[in-house]
View 1 (cartoon, rainbow over the protein chains, first blue to last red):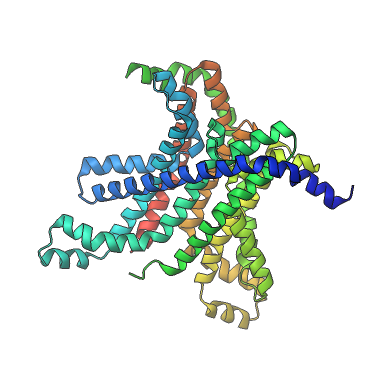
View 2 (view 1 turned 90 degrees about the vertical axis):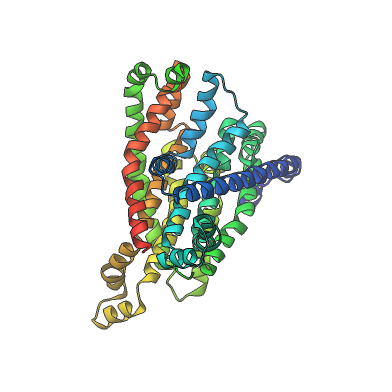
Length: 227
Length: 221
Protein backbone atom coordinates (compact mmCIF):
# COMPACT_ATOMS: atom_id res chain seq x y z
CA UNK A 1 0.00 0.00 0.00
CA UNK A 2 1.32 3.44 -0.82
CA UNK A 3 1.95 5.94 1.94
CA UNK A 4 -1.00 8.11 1.00
CA UNK A 5 -3.59 5.35 0.97
CA UNK A 6 -2.16 4.02 4.24
CA UNK A 7 -2.62 7.49 5.71
CA UNK A 8 -6.21 7.66 4.45
CA UNK A 9 -6.88 4.18 5.74
CA UNK A 10 -5.60 5.07 9.19
CA UNK A 11 -7.12 8.50 9.69
CA UNK A 12 -9.94 8.91 7.13
CA UNK A 13 -11.38 5.54 6.17
CA UNK A 14 -14.42 6.55 4.06
CA UNK A 15 -16.76 3.81 5.28
CA UNK A 16 -16.02 4.71 8.91
CA UNK A 17 -16.52 8.38 8.15
CA UNK A 18 -19.93 7.56 6.73
CA UNK A 19 -20.74 5.30 9.66
CA UNK A 20 -19.77 7.62 12.50
CA UNK A 21 -20.34 11.09 11.09
CA UNK A 22 -24.03 11.19 12.14
CA UNK A 23 -23.25 10.23 15.75
CA UNK A 24 -20.43 12.77 15.93
CA UNK A 25 -22.58 15.51 14.41
CA UNK A 26 -25.18 14.79 17.10
CA UNK A 27 -22.41 15.16 19.66
CA UNK A 28 -21.57 18.51 18.05
CA UNK A 29 -25.05 19.82 18.86
CA UNK A 30 -24.68 18.67 22.47
CA UNK A 31 -21.26 20.31 22.70
CA UNK A 32 -22.66 23.56 21.34
CA UNK A 33 -25.59 23.47 23.76
CA UNK A 34 -23.36 22.97 26.81
CA UNK A 35 -20.97 25.65 25.58
CA UNK A 36 -23.75 28.20 25.07
CA UNK A 37 -25.26 27.43 28.47
CA UNK A 38 -21.88 27.81 30.17
CA UNK A 39 -21.17 31.16 28.54
CA UNK A 40 -24.66 32.48 29.34
CA UNK A 41 -24.74 31.50 33.01
CA UNK A 42 -21.04 32.11 33.57
CA UNK A 43 -21.01 35.66 32.20
CA UNK A 44 -24.35 36.56 33.80
CA UNK A 45 -23.28 35.43 37.26
CA UNK A 46 -19.87 37.03 36.82
CA UNK A 47 -21.58 40.32 36.02
CA UNK A 48 -23.84 39.99 39.07
CA UNK A 49 -20.83 39.37 41.29
CA UNK A 50 -18.94 42.35 39.87
CA UNK A 51 -21.99 44.57 40.43
CA UNK A 52 -22.38 43.23 43.97
CA UNK A 53 -18.72 44.02 44.60
CA UNK A 54 -19.13 47.64 43.57
CA UNK A 55 -21.47 48.29 46.52
CA UNK A 56 -18.38 48.11 48.71
CA UNK A 57 -19.74 45.94 51.53
CA UNK A 58 -16.70 44.52 53.27
CA UNK A 59 -18.00 41.08 54.19
CA UNK A 60 -19.64 40.54 50.79
CA UNK A 61 -16.53 41.65 48.95
CA UNK A 62 -14.31 39.36 50.96
CA UNK A 63 -16.53 36.40 49.99
CA UNK A 64 -16.50 37.42 46.32
CA UNK A 65 -12.72 37.82 46.30
CA UNK A 66 -12.20 34.41 47.91
CA UNK A 67 -14.70 32.82 45.50
CA UNK A 68 -13.00 34.36 42.47
CA UNK A 69 -9.50 33.45 43.67
CA UNK A 70 -10.37 29.85 44.48
CA UNK A 71 -12.08 29.16 41.19
CA UNK A 72 -9.43 30.93 39.14
CA UNK A 73 -6.79 28.82 40.85
CA UNK A 74 -8.18 25.28 40.74
CA UNK A 75 -7.79 23.27 37.54
CA UNK A 76 -11.25 22.68 36.02
CA UNK A 77 -10.64 18.94 35.71
CA UNK A 78 -9.98 18.70 39.46
CA UNK A 79 -13.30 20.43 40.12
CA UNK A 80 -15.17 18.28 37.62
CA UNK A 81 -13.93 15.05 39.19
CA UNK A 82 -14.35 16.32 42.74
CA UNK A 83 -17.97 17.31 42.17
CA UNK A 84 -18.86 14.32 40.01
CA UNK A 85 -17.39 11.64 42.30
CA UNK A 86 -17.61 13.47 45.61
CA UNK A 87 -21.21 14.68 45.75
CA UNK A 88 -22.88 11.25 45.40
CA UNK A 89 -21.18 10.26 48.67
CA UNK A 90 -23.13 12.95 50.49
CA UNK A 91 -26.36 11.86 48.84
CA UNK A 92 -26.44 14.35 45.99
CA UNK A 93 -26.19 12.76 42.56
CA UNK A 94 -26.08 15.18 39.66
CA UNK A 95 -26.12 14.02 36.04
CA UNK A 96 -22.74 14.42 34.32
CA UNK A 97 -24.18 17.10 32.03
CA UNK A 98 -25.22 19.20 35.04
CA UNK A 99 -21.83 18.73 36.73
CA UNK A 100 -19.97 19.96 33.64
CA UNK A 101 -22.30 22.93 33.23
CA UNK A 102 -22.15 23.87 36.90
CA UNK A 103 -18.37 23.60 37.25
CA UNK A 104 -17.47 25.46 34.06
CA UNK A 105 -20.08 28.17 34.72
CA UNK A 106 -18.65 28.75 38.17
CA UNK A 107 -15.11 28.90 36.78
CA UNK A 108 -16.13 31.32 34.04
CA UNK A 109 -18.06 33.49 36.51
CA UNK A 110 -14.97 33.75 38.72
CA UNK A 111 -12.84 34.96 35.81
CA UNK A 112 -15.62 37.20 34.44
CA UNK A 113 -16.05 38.82 37.86
CA UNK A 114 -12.36 39.70 38.06
CA UNK A 115 -12.26 41.05 34.51
CA UNK A 116 -15.45 43.11 34.89
CA UNK A 117 -14.30 44.42 38.25
CA UNK A 118 -11.04 45.59 36.66
CA UNK A 119 -13.20 47.22 33.98
CA UNK A 120 -15.37 49.01 36.55
CA UNK A 121 -12.25 50.24 38.34
CA UNK A 122 -10.81 51.61 35.13
CA UNK A 123 -13.79 53.91 34.49
CA UNK A 124 -12.57 57.31 35.66
CA UNK A 125 -13.80 58.84 38.91
CA UNK A 126 -15.03 61.87 37.01
CA UNK A 127 -17.60 59.70 35.25
CA UNK A 128 -19.07 58.67 38.60
CA UNK A 129 -19.02 62.20 39.94
CA UNK A 130 -20.54 63.74 36.82
CA UNK A 131 -23.32 61.13 36.71
CA UNK A 132 -24.14 61.53 40.39
CA UNK A 133 -24.18 65.31 40.09
CA UNK A 134 -26.83 65.13 37.35
CA UNK A 135 -29.11 63.52 39.92
CA UNK A 136 -28.67 59.85 39.04
CA UNK A 137 -28.50 57.64 42.10
CA UNK A 138 -25.79 55.06 42.71
CA UNK A 139 -27.57 52.19 40.96
CA UNK A 140 -28.52 54.32 37.95
CA UNK A 141 -24.95 55.59 37.66
CA UNK A 142 -23.66 52.07 37.71
CA UNK A 143 -26.23 50.74 35.25
CA UNK A 144 -26.33 53.57 32.72
CA UNK A 145 -22.92 55.20 32.93
CA UNK A 146 -20.26 52.95 34.40
CA UNK A 147 -21.22 49.43 33.33
CA UNK A 148 -21.66 50.22 29.61
CA UNK A 149 -18.12 51.61 29.54
CA UNK A 150 -16.71 48.85 31.72
CA UNK A 151 -18.26 46.13 29.59
CA UNK A 152 -17.04 47.70 26.38
CA UNK A 153 -13.51 47.84 27.78
CA UNK A 154 -13.58 44.23 28.86
CA UNK A 155 -15.07 42.61 25.78
CA UNK A 156 -11.69 41.30 24.48
CA UNK A 157 -10.56 39.58 27.71
CA UNK A 158 -14.09 38.31 28.33
CA UNK A 159 -14.25 36.82 24.84
CA UNK A 160 -10.87 35.16 25.14
CA UNK A 161 -11.61 33.77 28.58
CA UNK A 162 -14.98 32.45 27.41
CA UNK A 163 -13.26 30.66 24.53
CA UNK A 164 -10.66 29.06 26.79
CA UNK A 165 -13.33 27.85 29.19
CA UNK A 166 -15.82 26.57 26.64
CA UNK A 167 -13.03 24.49 25.10
CA UNK A 168 -13.10 22.66 28.43
CA UNK A 169 -16.41 21.12 27.39
CA UNK A 170 -14.09 18.34 26.16
CA UNK A 171 -13.45 17.54 29.83
CA UNK A 172 -17.00 16.19 29.88
CA UNK A 173 -15.68 13.13 28.06
CA UNK A 174 -13.97 12.07 31.31
CA UNK A 175 -17.27 11.88 33.21
CA UNK A 176 -19.35 10.54 30.33
CA UNK A 177 -21.04 13.62 28.87
CA UNK A 178 -21.73 12.56 25.26
CA UNK A 179 -19.88 15.51 23.72
CA UNK A 180 -17.67 15.16 20.63
CA UNK A 181 -14.53 13.73 22.26
CA UNK A 182 -16.49 11.17 24.26
CA UNK A 183 -18.40 9.85 21.25
CA UNK A 184 -15.23 9.86 19.12
CA UNK A 185 -13.05 7.95 21.60
CA UNK A 186 -15.79 5.39 22.23
CA UNK A 187 -16.14 4.77 18.50
CA UNK A 188 -12.37 4.71 18.06
CA UNK A 189 -11.83 1.97 20.62
CA UNK A 190 -14.79 0.07 19.16
CA UNK A 191 -13.52 -0.05 15.58
CA UNK A 192 -9.81 0.04 16.37
CA UNK A 193 -9.17 2.79 13.86
CA UNK A 194 -8.26 6.42 14.27
CA UNK A 195 -10.90 7.77 11.86
CA UNK A 196 -13.58 8.65 14.47
CA UNK A 197 -10.99 10.48 16.56
CA UNK A 198 -9.82 12.45 13.53
CA UNK A 199 -13.42 13.38 12.79
CA UNK A 200 -13.92 14.49 16.39
CA UNK A 201 -10.76 16.60 16.38
CA UNK A 202 -11.78 18.19 13.07
CA UNK A 203 -15.24 18.96 14.44
CA UNK A 204 -13.73 20.73 17.44
CA UNK A 205 -11.42 22.73 15.18
CA UNK A 206 -14.24 23.66 12.80
CA UNK A 207 -16.35 24.68 15.78
CA UNK A 208 -13.71 26.83 17.46
CA UNK A 209 -11.74 28.35 14.56
CA UNK A 210 -14.50 30.93 13.87
CA UNK A 211 -14.65 31.73 17.57
CA UNK A 212 -10.89 32.18 17.80
CA UNK A 213 -10.97 34.44 14.73
CA UNK A 214 -13.85 36.37 16.30
CA UNK A 215 -11.70 36.77 19.40
CA UNK A 216 -8.88 38.19 17.25
CA UNK A 217 -11.24 40.61 15.54
CA UNK A 218 -12.77 41.72 18.83
CA UNK A 219 -9.29 42.33 20.20
CA UNK A 220 -8.50 44.89 17.51
CA UNK A 221 -12.02 46.32 17.41
CA UNK A 222 -12.40 46.97 21.15
CA UNK A 223 -8.79 47.51 22.15
CA UNK A 224 -8.19 48.49 25.79
CA UNK A 225 -8.17 52.15 26.64
CA UNK A 226 -10.28 53.36 23.77
CA UNK A 227 -13.41 54.19 25.75
CA UNK B 1 -22.88 18.82 57.48
CA UNK B 2 -21.10 15.98 59.25
CA UNK B 3 -21.29 13.82 56.14
CA UNK B 4 -19.79 16.63 54.08
CA UNK B 5 -16.85 16.91 56.47
CA UNK B 6 -16.60 13.13 56.61
CA UNK B 7 -16.64 12.81 52.81
CA UNK B 8 -14.63 15.84 51.70
CA UNK B 9 -12.46 16.90 54.65
CA UNK B 10 -11.62 13.62 56.37
CA UNK B 11 -8.28 14.45 57.97
CA UNK B 12 -7.49 10.85 58.80
CA UNK B 13 -7.88 9.74 55.16
CA UNK B 14 -5.98 12.80 53.97
CA UNK B 15 -3.09 11.90 56.24
CA UNK B 16 -3.09 8.32 55.05
CA UNK B 17 -3.09 9.21 51.36
CA UNK B 18 -0.71 12.16 51.71
CA UNK B 19 2.42 10.22 50.63
CA UNK B 20 0.78 9.06 47.38
CA UNK B 21 -0.46 12.55 46.59
CA UNK B 22 2.95 13.98 47.38
CA UNK B 23 4.51 11.59 44.89
CA UNK B 24 1.88 12.80 42.39
CA UNK B 25 2.88 16.36 43.16
CA UNK B 26 6.47 15.41 42.32
CA UNK B 27 5.32 14.25 38.90
CA UNK B 28 3.25 17.41 38.41
CA UNK B 29 6.35 19.49 39.16
CA UNK B 30 8.37 17.36 36.76
CA UNK B 31 5.80 17.87 33.99
CA UNK B 32 5.81 21.63 34.64
CA UNK B 33 9.62 21.75 34.52
CA UNK B 34 9.43 20.06 31.13
CA UNK B 35 6.52 21.87 29.52
CA UNK B 36 6.83 25.47 30.74
CA UNK B 37 10.32 26.04 29.22
CA UNK B 38 9.25 24.16 26.08
CA UNK B 39 6.25 26.47 25.71
CA UNK B 40 8.25 29.59 26.53
CA UNK B 41 10.85 28.74 23.89
CA UNK B 42 8.28 27.68 21.29
CA UNK B 43 6.32 30.83 21.99
CA UNK B 44 9.43 32.94 21.60
CA UNK B 45 10.04 31.39 18.20
CA UNK B 46 6.41 32.01 17.22
CA UNK B 47 6.45 35.59 18.52
CA UNK B 48 9.60 36.56 16.62
CA UNK B 49 8.66 34.73 13.41
CA UNK B 50 5.45 36.78 13.32
CA UNK B 51 7.64 39.87 12.82
CA UNK B 52 9.05 38.68 9.50
CA UNK B 53 8.31 40.71 6.40
CA UNK B 54 7.84 37.45 4.51
CA UNK B 55 4.06 37.17 4.24
CA UNK B 56 3.70 33.41 3.60
CA UNK B 57 5.68 32.67 6.77
CA UNK B 58 3.48 35.03 8.75
CA UNK B 59 0.32 33.39 7.44
CA UNK B 60 1.70 29.93 8.19
CA UNK B 61 2.55 30.87 11.77
CA UNK B 62 -0.83 32.55 12.24
CA UNK B 63 -2.53 29.38 11.00
CA UNK B 64 -0.47 27.30 13.44
CA UNK B 65 -1.37 29.58 16.33
CA UNK B 66 -5.08 29.66 15.53
CA UNK B 67 -5.26 25.91 14.95
CA UNK B 68 -3.77 25.11 18.33
CA UNK B 69 -5.78 27.77 20.08
CA UNK B 70 -8.94 26.30 18.57
CA UNK B 71 -8.42 22.67 19.44
CA UNK B 72 -9.14 21.83 23.10
CA UNK B 73 -5.94 20.60 24.77
CA UNK B 74 -7.64 17.41 25.94
CA UNK B 75 -8.70 16.56 22.39
CA UNK B 76 -5.14 17.13 21.20
CA UNK B 77 -3.73 15.03 24.02
CA UNK B 78 -6.07 12.11 23.28
CA UNK B 79 -5.31 12.40 19.58
CA UNK B 80 -1.56 12.32 20.22
CA UNK B 81 -1.76 9.56 22.79
CA UNK B 82 -4.29 7.17 21.27
CA UNK B 83 -4.51 8.36 17.65
CA UNK B 84 -0.88 8.60 16.59
CA UNK B 85 -0.05 4.98 17.56
CA UNK B 86 -2.22 3.96 14.59
CA UNK B 87 0.32 5.72 12.41
CA UNK B 88 3.16 3.92 14.17
CA UNK B 89 4.08 6.85 16.41
CA UNK B 90 3.94 5.49 19.92
CA UNK B 91 4.82 8.01 22.62
CA UNK B 92 4.91 7.40 26.37
CA UNK B 93 2.31 9.22 28.45
CA UNK B 94 4.99 11.73 29.43
CA UNK B 95 6.05 12.19 25.82
CA UNK B 96 2.44 12.70 24.67
CA UNK B 97 1.90 15.30 27.37
CA UNK B 98 5.09 17.14 26.37
CA UNK B 99 4.23 17.18 22.67
CA UNK B 100 0.63 18.29 23.30
CA UNK B 101 1.65 21.04 25.67
CA UNK B 102 4.43 22.19 23.37
CA UNK B 103 1.93 22.70 20.53
CA UNK B 104 -0.77 24.23 22.69
CA UNK B 105 1.29 26.50 24.93
CA UNK B 106 3.63 27.67 22.14
CA UNK B 107 0.55 29.07 20.43
CA UNK B 108 -0.62 30.90 23.54
CA UNK B 109 2.80 32.11 24.66
CA UNK B 110 3.48 33.09 21.04
CA UNK B 111 0.53 35.48 21.04
CA UNK B 112 1.69 36.99 24.33
CA UNK B 113 5.24 37.50 23.05
CA UNK B 114 3.93 38.93 19.79
CA UNK B 115 1.90 41.55 21.67
CA UNK B 116 4.98 42.31 23.76
CA UNK B 117 7.33 42.63 20.80
CA UNK B 118 4.87 44.85 18.96
CA UNK B 119 4.54 47.08 22.01
CA UNK B 120 8.21 48.02 21.71
CA UNK B 121 8.58 50.97 19.38
CA UNK B 122 10.18 50.60 15.96
CA UNK B 123 12.69 53.25 16.97
CA UNK B 124 14.24 50.77 19.40
CA UNK B 125 14.97 48.38 16.52
CA UNK B 126 16.41 51.13 14.37
CA UNK B 127 18.52 52.64 17.15
CA UNK B 128 19.89 49.24 18.17
CA UNK B 129 20.70 48.27 14.59
CA UNK B 130 22.37 51.61 13.92
CA UNK B 131 24.76 51.01 16.82
CA UNK B 132 25.99 47.97 14.95
CA UNK B 133 24.08 45.20 16.73
CA UNK B 134 22.95 42.37 14.46
CA UNK B 135 19.25 41.55 14.11
CA UNK B 136 19.65 38.63 16.50
CA UNK B 137 21.47 40.73 19.10
CA UNK B 138 18.85 43.47 18.80
CA UNK B 139 16.06 40.96 19.40
CA UNK B 140 17.78 39.33 22.33
CA UNK B 141 19.33 42.29 24.17
CA UNK B 142 17.10 45.23 23.26
CA UNK B 143 13.61 44.11 22.23
CA UNK B 144 13.04 41.01 24.33
CA UNK B 145 13.75 42.52 27.78
CA UNK B 146 11.33 45.39 27.11
CA UNK B 147 8.74 43.10 25.51
CA UNK B 148 8.80 40.71 28.47
CA UNK B 149 8.43 43.56 30.93
CA UNK B 150 5.43 44.91 29.03
CA UNK B 151 3.56 41.60 28.99
CA UNK B 152 4.76 40.14 32.29
CA UNK B 153 1.24 39.77 33.78
CA UNK B 154 0.11 37.86 30.69
CA UNK B 155 3.18 35.63 30.77
CA UNK B 156 2.60 34.77 34.42
CA UNK B 157 -1.12 34.21 34.00
CA UNK B 158 -0.45 31.97 31.01
CA UNK B 159 2.04 30.00 33.07
CA UNK B 160 -0.61 29.53 35.78
CA UNK B 161 -2.93 28.17 33.09
CA UNK B 162 -0.22 25.75 31.92
CA UNK B 163 0.32 24.44 35.45
CA UNK B 164 -3.45 23.96 35.87
CA UNK B 165 -3.58 22.24 32.50
CA UNK B 166 -1.04 19.61 33.55
CA UNK B 167 -3.95 17.97 35.42
CA UNK B 168 -5.12 16.75 31.99
CA UNK B 169 -2.19 14.34 32.03
CA UNK B 170 -4.24 12.22 34.46
CA UNK B 171 -6.47 11.24 31.51
CA UNK B 172 -3.57 9.41 29.83
CA UNK B 173 -2.69 7.77 33.16
CA UNK B 174 0.39 9.82 33.91
CA UNK B 175 0.60 9.56 37.71
CA UNK B 176 0.60 13.29 38.46
CA UNK B 177 -1.24 14.82 41.39
CA UNK B 178 -4.81 14.60 40.09
CA UNK B 179 -4.30 11.01 38.93
CA UNK B 180 -2.83 9.97 42.29
CA UNK B 181 -5.61 11.65 44.23
CA UNK B 182 -8.24 10.07 41.98
CA UNK B 183 -6.71 6.64 42.61
CA UNK B 184 -6.70 7.35 46.33
CA UNK B 185 -10.34 8.42 46.09
CA UNK B 186 -11.29 5.20 44.31
CA UNK B 187 -9.51 3.08 46.91
CA UNK B 188 -10.85 4.87 49.98
CA UNK B 189 -14.37 5.55 48.62
CA UNK B 190 -13.90 9.06 49.89
CA UNK B 191 -13.36 12.40 48.12
CA UNK B 192 -10.97 13.80 50.75
CA UNK B 193 -7.79 12.89 48.82
CA UNK B 194 -9.05 15.02 45.94
CA UNK B 195 -9.86 17.86 48.29
CA UNK B 196 -6.30 17.58 49.53
CA UNK B 197 -4.98 17.75 45.98
CA UNK B 198 -7.20 20.79 45.33
CA UNK B 199 -5.83 22.43 48.48
CA UNK B 200 -2.25 21.81 47.31
CA UNK B 201 -3.03 23.40 43.93
CA UNK B 202 -4.54 26.31 45.83
CA UNK B 203 -1.51 26.78 48.07
CA UNK B 204 0.89 26.59 45.13
CA UNK B 205 -0.96 28.80 42.66
CA UNK B 206 -2.86 31.27 44.80
CA UNK B 207 0.12 33.60 45.40
CA UNK B 208 0.68 33.78 41.63
CA UNK B 209 -3.00 34.47 40.95
CA UNK B 210 -2.89 37.32 43.50
CA UNK B 211 0.30 38.66 41.96
CA UNK B 212 -1.26 38.76 38.50
CA UNK B 213 -4.36 40.50 39.82
CA UNK B 214 -2.21 43.17 41.45
CA UNK B 215 -0.04 43.68 38.38
CA UNK B 216 -3.10 43.93 36.16
CA UNK B 217 -4.97 46.36 38.37
CA UNK B 218 -1.87 48.49 38.62
CA UNK B 219 -1.31 48.56 34.87
CA UNK B 220 -4.97 49.37 34.33
CA UNK B 221 -4.40 52.83 35.77
